[in-house]
Image 1: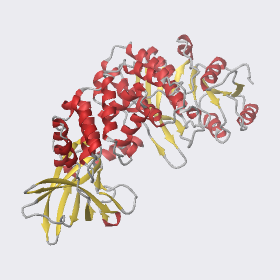
Image 2 (image 1 turned 90 degrees about the vertical axis):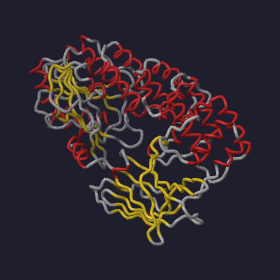
Image 3 (image 1 turned 60 degrees about the vertical axis):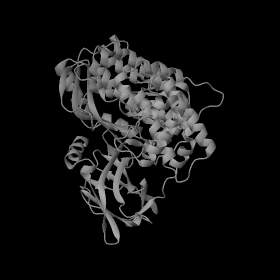
Image 4 (image 1 turned 135 degrees about the horizontal axis):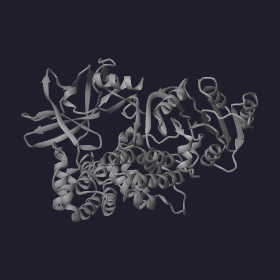
Length: 573
């Protein structure tokens, strides 16, 4: 359906697939709220819910809407077909369930016409039924208006590879023969990287130019693939991006790109692969693709990942999905309570990961300490003789993992377990695993900058015993530190923890070091939720997170400073 005459300023290509609930709002946001001459080219990809009928009704009522049936299957080919039909001077893309804010296209068009750039990029927000948020709140790429940039001038632009928050000069798009691949996932990252690399100049507008709808479940176009197929699809596309950007001589660009891949996009997909159900009897392409991608990695960036992430990447290249999943669980992945990994399986996992050549000695030692030493020493009952014998045998070829502590402050039990593994002493290893029962905190009062703790002294406390409060980030033994003395006050022992004693944001677990004349023991602390009192308000540096009831681990959450929170809030606005 065309009018055959107009040459609009902008052609907006909109692929649709079963979006009848939202497509009217999407089209209205483009047709009624944009003060520019445009056409909307809708390409329907086999909708069965009435989307096609709704779009054709809009096309019949408004000549700016042109409706087509997709000749193939998938969002990539639908966009390519839409580009072939487009007649505008400039080109934009949108998804049929999203919204375009008022004035978005006018802002990008004005910049492109004044600068002559091949591409204009703007900011965006995501929204759901309950909230709206800014994925770019911590980015600097959209912080200020700029014209005539190249990708090496502003490498942060590579962090955003969605197609819908930008405007392209149509002549540029066609000269570069940019096209979307027909893959089940991540079909826009290669076209966008191609455009970023090829563009003679790029403009940035700080305006919010797109509102992306985050839909629950797996109904959106980007969620229609199994875990294995989706990750394989992503990796094929990421490999092409890595090669495209590898040809650009810029260390800053390489650093920005690999930080994004290894800490964000790639990590999200790897976790999905490790957590997803695998198809029995079907060989996965993921290990080989991941190995190929990591062969191109920036080594400095990879070695500065947290050790458990390095291990999960390495295990992913071997297809060791179950071991990778157990490492994720042991590290408290996703903010969940860490689940201790069987120490024998932990050594097998570290050996396998080290064998890939991806883990350096520092990462191997950190993993061995967190997954083996802390696991053995943190038990309330000793390990069996058979378990201890197997652990000693497995650890013998890797004594260097256990020779020194990775933590500046070490638990006494950890020190004993580590020494037993180095010495190959089965009996001493079993003795090291006699951890104490948790100590119950009577009250935990948290004000804006200080947490006050009261507890009854452990039973049978010998004269001359000193108590010290320690804190650490769960799963991060290297963060262990002393945060205060515990002193007697009447029939209670009390301690104060200042926010300044916790050097970084996040959750800190509390433990009690009992230093008696005949030895030391570090005891975990637990508290009844009903015994926690929060008096710091929303501006406090300290709080306690979690909504559980009953007895829970005694933890503190250190918030960022008020200034930092204010800066983040301004960026979100």
